[in-house]
Amino acid sequence: MRIRLLVLSALFAQILLGFWGAAVNASPVLSGSQQAASILFSDDFEAGALGASWSTGKTASGVVELNTVYPHSGAQGVFLGQKLVGNASGSLVLALNLSG
Image (cartoon, rainbow, N blue to C red; front, side, top):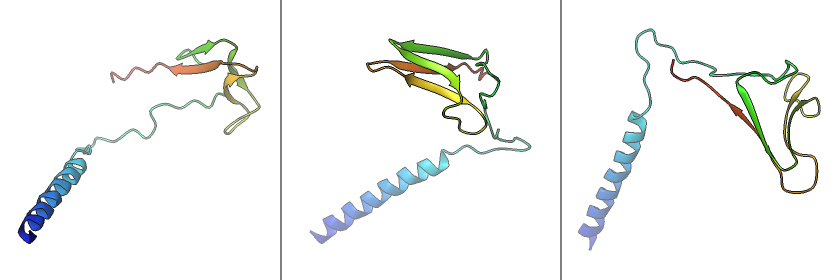
């Protein structure tokens, strides 16, 4: 019984080490002068209108608007949701060209 338990423990350890080793080795590595981008996209919503890359969607009485009620930083932010009782939603979709 002890031998079986020892063998099962060794197999379990190999499985765990193999799994964690694969996860560690799967991380991307930069080479040469290559640098990772620090920010892919940023918008502070201070322009007074949404940019051309943004599209909005809403259902029922949903709302998508720039306002000064809930700013993250700066003077205004984007409100997504509803202002009336009932089922509604607002969505904001950003189109990005990731081809390079």
